[in-house]
Length: 397
View 1: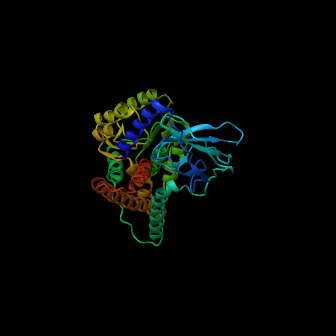
View 2: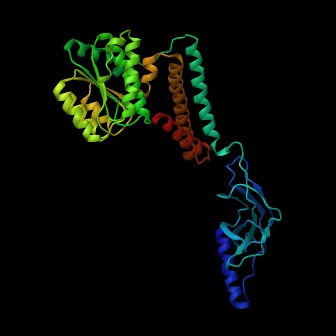
View 3: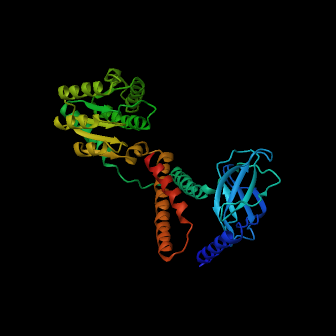
């Protein structure tokens, strides 16, 4: 209705203008106020003003200007439609003084005299970003859950942890190698020690080496990085010492091959065909070589246990291996194998935290959907985005 009345009024002004003169410029807005935006990163200013008295008749829009000095020419920030009397100016420089002015733009493009700010306003960074309040709540839920379950485990109370079949199969695989008089092959991925998956693989190697020491089986660990070789040697030596058989440790079974991806794979594939290990463990970050290694191990009849967080390689391991640690199961191996209260409590706390966040997401999605259907504006949109992003980051890392 307002648009219709405005259109009729504009049409009348055009007729009057053609007959008697120009359309008059609108009266300016008044009482322009600029304030630092609360709870932000220090790059926003809040503007507010009183509407022009001609807002409903002659004003097409309001034009906002900014400047770093009252003497420097003002530059246009943006135009907002008539009827609006506030705006948040973003992407400003922190601790920089700013002056603002707002003009009313008439129907024919003429601007009124500006309403100005007389005192400079400075955007400053706050201790807490209010836009991330929902993320803070989610973080507190996770941290609180982890601290609670770590304290629970330290008191000696049992924690129910789901069994991971791939890790439970270590004894079976090493035992089979012992019975057949063959070796166990362990590959900790093809990345260096700065890759978290390599570290997780070395953790599993500790368990495999200790079991091999107890069963008197040989573990062979060809590596594609020299630092991984050094870490693997120390890990295996510590495992043999923990098993009470330090004399059985042979560092020559852990060796460096080459950094070149397919040169390394060619060596390992040939060694597998010649020596026919009874058990093969692939634990770490893999790429195109995953299918080559898994299919070779399958062809020689070895028991194969794989673990990786590389989504593109998981289908190959699932298809060709007997057991596969998928994503988070692989990273949980350290807590699962060690049985340490801090690690078990952390694992349990993360799981509980994820359940709480997922329940919150489901409730939020339901309320947002109901609100949209009913035409009610709800504040859950940004909360859900933050929750989903945070949950994905936790799951993927």
